[in-house]
Image (cartoon, helix red, strand yellow):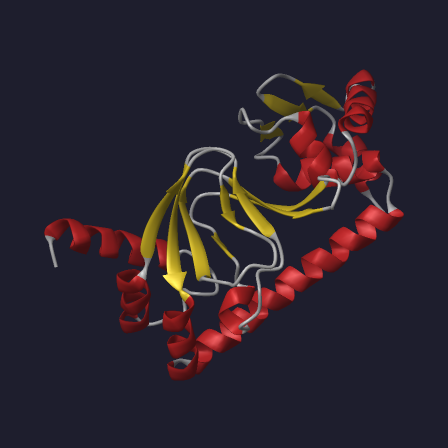
Length: 230
């Protein structure tokens, strides 16, 4: 193995350790994952995998940003989650030999590691603790999706927006990369851009938030928490 390959393997092992449902694996298992992984590069807007195609394995984002979405036949999308660096996605592809349940799209130039499903299936049989950690992670994911369905069905857009701002803000600031347009925000909230614009304008008019081109700043966290409450 070349020095560059060894460095890449060690870098990926370190990255895998930072993923909660993998950090219980021993060095031998992590090394097997890292050595079998394939690095792929995607341009902004490029599809990583499509809904209902055969699952290739577990994806780990090295750099960039990715969105996971469900698309309607009319082309409308519901964003299920944004994926940032050092996060894994397509966990379901580890447990079951089933098609992918959603579509993943790069939001900006992104570098992704793909750990093949065959490697993961072998690790599941050899490391029962891996299966336990993975099941706990999937339970968290199901809980999140149940909450998402409830929010979309039962809560007004402004309440969902307030909750998103509180959850995603770093301190009192929600950074807005170039790709984080109002259309993306609307797809995250399950609505359309005009409705999001009105909700943002309402919160800004009440001096609860301040909307700038590259960030949204929370000015009155207590008021926002009241709006976000069910």
